[in-house]
Image (cartoon, rainbow, N blue to C red; front, side, top):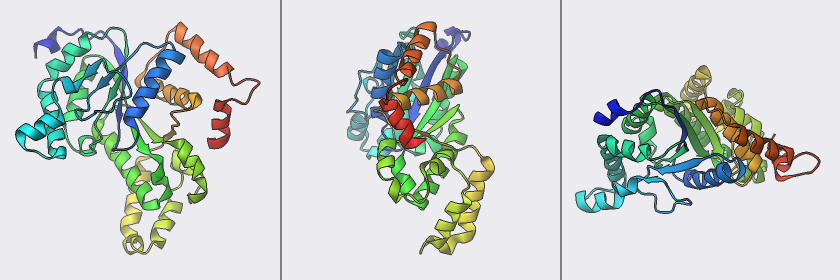
Length: 299
């Protein structure tokens, strides 16, 4: 590709790739974090929508893949179902990578937030997304995958194990610096009484042998003790999965997650942003703010 050769590899760009299953709150997060970074942190940010079926955006994207192709038009023209049409769209984006580069070249000195589709296959075994972001990495884009999972899965041991396997598989396949996130943490707190363990157990992924005991007690899962043990052992042997808690309505939560993401992709903020962060943190001194309430509830 001519554009690949013309791009200066010495340039550095930073951003986050927001991925996760449907209903995890990816688009809501992108809209909230866009406003938070600009208004509270003084960080220059642009959102890139790479979901060709994203019709309910809570932001105005700087780059929108729906100007290149949409799921709806593929379904109509090629007679495909929604899943097949989405796969086709992402493969079409990879084939037209130059289009994305042209759009990105018009975004100067901005931190990028990529809003991605919710199709799980794209992040566990399909190669398209992986290939696109590997190409961007080679061009100097320092990206971090932010994997959102709905925290209600913590309420069921089998669902939580599935969440852990999904997160591990995604980390291994996408191969970007990675931050796993339990979204809707405010709802998790409200339903804490229904959890088998404390919230820290699920966030830090502590000793899963306790979770294994619950699996082995289940009417269905107890028949698969060896399989359950093998799955839990696999997750613990890798030791890669842990979660940050996210409440999109809490500045403290967004600030903590920002710090984890910046550490993962190597982003270093300027003096203006540093002053904004200090101002946010100082708001907690001497008063019980929203940030303090969040700490009291979740820490």
